[in-house]
Image (cartoon, rainbow, N blue to C red):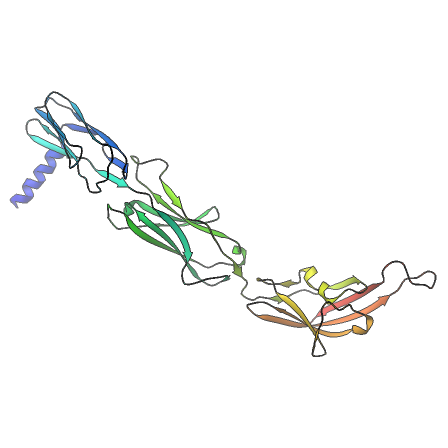
Length: 314
C-alpha cells in the first residue's frame, strides 16, 4: 500500500510540474529529426532533459531548453524534461515514431481467374513493414467508392506486417470493376496532414454470368440474298452471356456450316446452340426462307434479291 501511495503522489507531482512542452507530443518519421522545447513557468534551480539520445544537462540560467535528435531511429525512446523547484519533478514527452509501409498489395484469396456472379470471394490486403500498427487504417475501394475500413488493435512501436480481408459478392454489373486497398496512418493533430498513405495497384475483376449463356426474344429478320446463319442472332444481341457465347447450328440432326448461304430450300427447324466455359444453351428455331424477286423486264433485277427470314424461338 505504501508503494501505491508513493506512485500516486509522484503522478500528482508530475501533473502539476511547472514546465511546459511544445509540442506536447512528438510525431516523427523514422530517421527524421525532432526538436521539442521545454520551458519553466516558475523560477527554478535547474532545468534539464533526460533521454537515451539528445539529453540536455541541467542548467540554472535558462528558462527554455530544447531536446533535439537529428536522426531518430530508437523506437522506444522516452525523453523527459525535469525541473528543480520546491522539489524535483518531471514531464515525459510522448514520442510516436512512424514508418510508412514498404509495400501494399491486394489479391483474391484461394481463387484465380474470372468470378461467378452471386458467389462470395475474399479479398486480401497485405501491408508490409509499417509502424505503429495501432494507428493504421486499411481502406477498401471499388473504383472511387469507399467500401469499408479495417483497424488494428496490436500495440507495437516497431514495424509489423499486417493483413486485412474483405468479403465481396459481385454481380454482373461489377464485370471490369477495379478494387484497391489503401494503408493510412492516422497520427493525430501533431502528425503530418494529410495523413501519410500508400495504395495498392488496382485489382481488375472479371465477372461471368451465373446462368450463362441465354438466347432471348423473338425476331422477324429481313436479310439480303445469300446471307448466312452467321448473321443471326449475334447482330441483334439476342444471345447474351459472359464470357461471350459461341454459336453453332444443327439441322436434321447434323451440324450446319453457319457460313453457308441460305436458299428457299433450306427452310425447316434448326437448333441453335450457345455455349461458353460455363454451360450450353440450345433452342429450336423455325426458319422459313422466301424469295421475293423483283424484275420489270423479265430479266434479273439489278438490286439484290431479298430473303425474308422469319424466326421464332420455341
